[in-house]
Structure formats: structure tokens, C-alpha cells
Image (cartoon, rainbow over all chains, first blue to last red; front, top):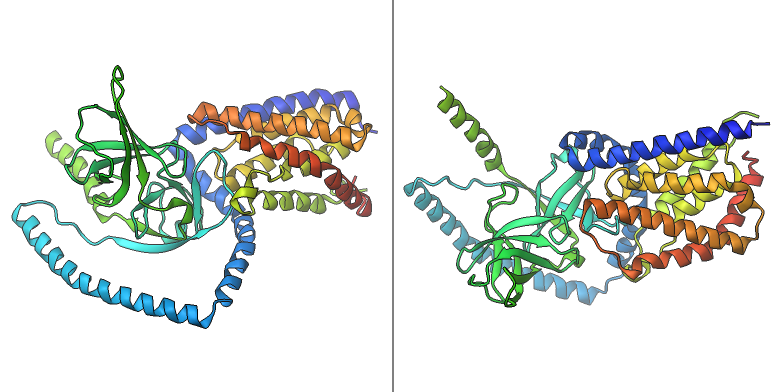
Length: 290
Length: 160
């Protein structure tokens, strides 16, 4: 027979400890960056569950890949060939432009853009926290993925890495409520910040004065100012520009160019320039100090 | 009888519940997903309150946070509080009919969801949709079957 009363008092103590531990975890995890190292190990520990949960959808994908008709496949191959041909021709022009751009930048004494390391990752379909917009991808710390890494696809910006494990990582989408991305309007270089709205297909631009020259249909590209995203990638198109008299700012909404509900493959980008820009301020500071 | 009696099977049922929680389902069904972890954890806390209580709840909650990519500690906080209520009232819950138990489970799931919502609300500027609460109903409806299955497992393997 177990002592009933002793257990019930220690139960309250245990609840107290659990609540304190949870609350301090919440604070530590959301406010201090140093905790992210611990998270990598914890995430890696639970990664088998992620992979097991992904098995059914992998199997479904396999089935749908097997039961494709021959005619559909032929049609697809023909389409892809055409597309590839056109893109190869465009690439010739692109190479030439790149060379020219490099030379012009050298003439202007601007830093030359170096080629970035890129890696394709596939989405792992698992259920996520209902209050945030995230996807899990199948590349992790062993592939060199780091927190804050920009994620793109062939259409534009998808999001950034917020959580890393050894073999998978978590991408926060640009439309998440806690995400903000510095952008500029492609047409006239007006700078703004695009915050996520919490809805999968909505961004909003806060603190835009009503006299700003922004129109519906304008394309927003990354401005590269935050240091996270490389410059010049398309982010969203303006879907609404409203100004109500008496309001200090205009109400500007945008729609991401990437179909965020249908992404399957994404591109991880390593910014080589990040390292050089990271070291330069230190060096200049040192020089000043000397 | 060793204290480790059936511990492996008990943990296995919890892992199964965690898996069902992260398993992808078609978008329209997603908001009807029952709170599997609370169902399984709740059963064990009611049946074996001296073995499974806040410690298990905390660890399971932490695993759930990691699996779902939620801020760490949110699910552990909610599950610890809910499990505390179950363990304190396990005698009462054991002695009422299955459908009355389902009502209590519904209340506990709602509490669990609201604690999670409040905690996340403190961190981010989120808003609640009615869809978030639909799973309370499915969890209540599925409780009697989970109860019967887990009781069979408990008796079959003599987990005490």
C-alpha cells in the first residue's frame, strides 16, 4: 500500500516544479539565442519520430509516381525538353550579362557578387504547431544548414531556417506572424518591411506613409538590408493599397509570389558574402582603435 | 513485481500517440485531429496515478514541442496542469460512466488548448479561429474506444 497523503502533497510540489521549469524554458527558448545549440541535440533525439511520421506520405508519393500513364509521361518529357531548351538559350545571355555586370561593378569599385553555394532540399510532410507557419525540410546541421539561413525556390523567397537538427530543419515561412523581411519595390526602389500576417498567402507592410508611390501589382524584391536574405529575389506583389483619412499610415497588403501551400522542393543558399561583411566591421573598428 | 513492469509498453503507447499527432493528414481533416497525446496520457494517469503523473506529462510535452516546432515548454506546461487535475481526481473519474468521462476529457482538452493558446499569445500576436476548437469534439467521441483499447492492453500485459 502506498501512502496516499504523502503523494498528494508531493504532487503539488511536482506541479510547481513542472510549471516553473516550463515557464523558464519558454522564456529561455524565445529570448536567448544560446539555447539554440541545446535545441539541435534535442531535435536530433526526436528525429526518428519525424521520419516515421513521414513514411505514409512518402509511400503515397511512390504510388502516385508509379501509376502515371505512358502518354502523360511522354507529354511531360516533351514539355520539359522545350522548357530546358528555352532556358539554355536564356542562360547564354545571362552568362554574358553576368560577365558584363562584374566588369561594370569592378569599374564602379562596388563589391563583386560571388557565386553562392546552393543545395536543393525536399519538404518532409509532418504536422506542425497550428499557430505558426512552418515546413520541415530534409537537410540539417550535417549538410551545413544554420539558423537564419535564407530559403528560396524557383519562384522567389520562401522563408528562413529557425530550427536545426542533425538531418532535418524547420523553415519559418515569410507569411508567419513573427516573420519580417526587408524589401524594396522593384519599380522605384522604395524600401519597406513586409511582415507576415499569419495567413498563408498574406503579408502586410506597416509604417508606409500614404503619399508613398506604391501601386497594386508592384513587385517587391529583397533589399538585402537585414543581412539575412540575398538581394534582388522576388518576395511578393502588392495586392491592396488603402488610405483612410485620419490614419497615420496607409494599409498595404501583399501576396507572396511563391505558392506557399504547394511547395515541394526548396533551395538552401549559403551567403559567402556574409562572412566577409561580418569581419569587415570588426576590422574597421580595430583600425579605428589603433 | 518490479517497478519497471510494462514500462516499455506504456512508453510505446505514448510514442504512438505522439506519432499520430505529427502524422500529416489532408488539410480539411487537420482541425478534427483528436488530441491523441492527452487521450493516452490521460488514461495512464487515471489508471496508474502513482506511476504516470507530472513527470511523464512534462517529458511528453517537451517531445511534442520539439516535434511540432512550438516554443519549448508550452506543451509541457499545459500537459502538466491537465495531468495534475486528472491525478488529483482519478478516483472520481474512474467511477463514472464512459460517456461522463468523455465529457470530462472534453473539458480537459479545452483547458489544454486554451493554456497553449494563452502561452503562445504572450509570445506572438496570434488569434484564435473556431476551427482550433473542433478537435475537442472528436477527442470526446474517441475517448471511450481509447479507454477500452488501453484497458485491454493494461490487463493483457498486467501493467500496474
